[in-house]
Image (cartoon, rainbow, N blue to C red):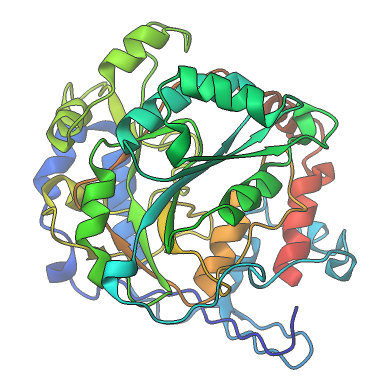
Length: 398
């Protein structure tokens, strides 16, 4: 860690009274089931505590200010501290800033523009049809993990309706297998090709709403500070025919407007077609997003996300691309911990988060990746031997 870099505490400014709780309680009954209950539990979690266990750490002359102990250990599968001493963080070249990015000088709002950034493997190229269709003729930067040539990938993307004039394609090919897929190196490669002031990062299996770019342009004056991040609420489309291979049916069901998504989100109440992303498998991942408020949030409004109830929170965000941006740590490859650790570093670096009121992302059903299968098997066999957990613990110590 560089000796002059200062980390701030994770923000925990939460509801202080019942009057501060969002007044959309009646909507809980529409959603039904677990997520409404989970949302209520999050509100309770956000109430101030009389005391909290604090963890202090330091490295060189840098200042690491208090961070709750659960923020250090919360991404691990359990509280076994033997994991925390498995790998020495000094053996990894973790990065604090994006050194090759432009400086974070102030800029007028008319100089703010947005690039859609993503990464994917060749078997996910087909979903780029939706990205290019919905982002229209605005910049897209995509990194592809493949042994094919850039020319071949561009030809495929052009056939999917993508305009090469607005498309940057970066190829990363020096990896051995899908299980060691260099996801964070690909993310950084896609970011390195960004020419606009800001980027919208999404994983390729998340489809953006058609007018997200136009909505972001209306918020340019709110992005003048380079450590402002806008959260785009992420939802998932439930598989509609018992298998994720119903591609045409799934594409037909992708909503084009907020109202269409809300209709799918709230009806039928017992089994909605659309739910908050991974709210069943990993509710902490997006649980701090104010989904219930988003339903009635005005397009012009930005809602602050001040209460983050879990260190596992990993929303998809709009951010300034400049030197102060923490990079994705490239030691993480394959499945697990790669985006969580990045978001933890972003939060510790002092970014403030606000939620957009109209735009959304929708996860498109797909088969489980080879990397995730390997991760799940290793976790089941011996959780303490899972490398990414050990690497994440090392990163936390750093």
